[in-house]
Length: 205
Length: 197
Image (cartoon, rainbow over all chains, first blue to last red):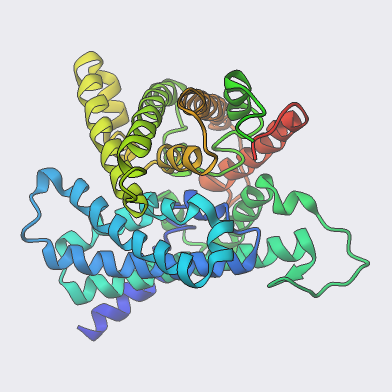
């Protein structure tokens, strides 16, 4: 059991990483990576939803009819997203306003749906929970790295605090849409060109 | 702001200056997965246009006649996603009848329209920006057309790219993202014309 948990965690963090190996779920969250703080909030919400929806779906898996499983999964995910949305509105109204529709868009994040389909529907609750947390984290740390560099180069700040100083000319392209695409591409390039060199790993994409 | 630009303004702004894919990153999953062949890209693009326009209209009606009057704002995510899922099912059945090869080609990606962030995104943006009914329809249609243009352009480039030598590690998703970034920069050139907040 412990071995299995370890294996799932490691594969979700590195060899089967949702972002740079499976290229899933970049949609709803890449947009908020121009500010580190928003990314952290968004990532925590995402890990929460992925973990708990995986757990719930796994517990209900014997009663979910296969024909309508998509519908059931989406509904379960949506309920958790509503929870996250309400918590954010209550405790972090400013961040919630900035994130706007992107909190709601966690529902359609392909990772959550993908993990539910690929894992939670065939595995025990505890394993699914671990899988949910680890794939959520595997996804979040990539985004956090991207957000760190985008905020640093785009506004010269980290977490809203000026760190570089006035000599730095902000690369405004970094906080705009193309910056997100370029950063993610460079990240994938570095990871696949330097860290994972195994050609078998590359063929899968 | 919804007063400022009219229905046509929103339509064109949704296609060019606020392209849902290239400036808001919505709908990336299917964009990366289905942009290998122009033909499939066109098929999926039209399915997205249809679903997006229809669901933005439906969701607008449901939101302002059912959800708002009864103060059920927190339920909007669930309601919207159910309407979208039902609609996708309908499109799937239609495509299955009309074009068998297209159905086989799109394969597993049709159900994925349900989780295409762009569709839910359009509905959520129209609520946040207080669009009127006609503005919502033109926003849905414009976003759909913008998405189609982006994915078809990308598919065209990727078809040519299949014969090119791409640096190691950049094959597949990497180079696609870089192209998307360059396309996004090109679309930013339209920003001066008009904008959506």
